[in-house]
Length: 189
Image 1: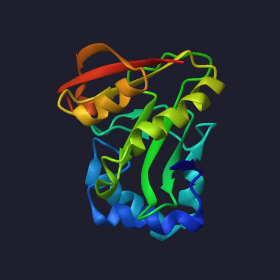
Image 2: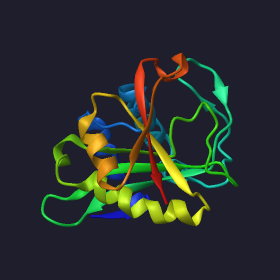
Image 3: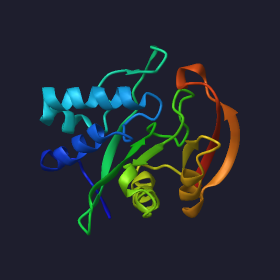
């Protein structure tokens, strides 16, 4: 498995994963975010692919689930791709950061988010993707990255601890992030 920069020639596999269900770009808005991305792909595939790499945060504010708007951070997505048996598109990993500091604004729950398509889970793709992304985070000058999980998301917690992540805190997410308890993890780079 490798991390690849999203491209038009691989977009059909990404869109197929969104249509099949159980896969989305936004873990809070889930199916709604999948529908929105499919609409953007249908409207302008090239613009959609280009939007997945926004290192200058030019795309404008982010609208949170509660409708509030916050400043966008620089960031990008990479696709998990496996050319082996039954491979192809396996999932997505996103990275965002605040230039000049490892700290994040309070409205950003973590530096990295990832999701593996349901039919490829349990094969180590998330662990490999996270390991491959960490050197890129280090290149941005970060001394650590933070990730959050739900308390019952044991597979994701296993991914994070396999890469050396440690639990920092148990906290309550703001209503703008859906509320509820969450765990914050840190990986020192």
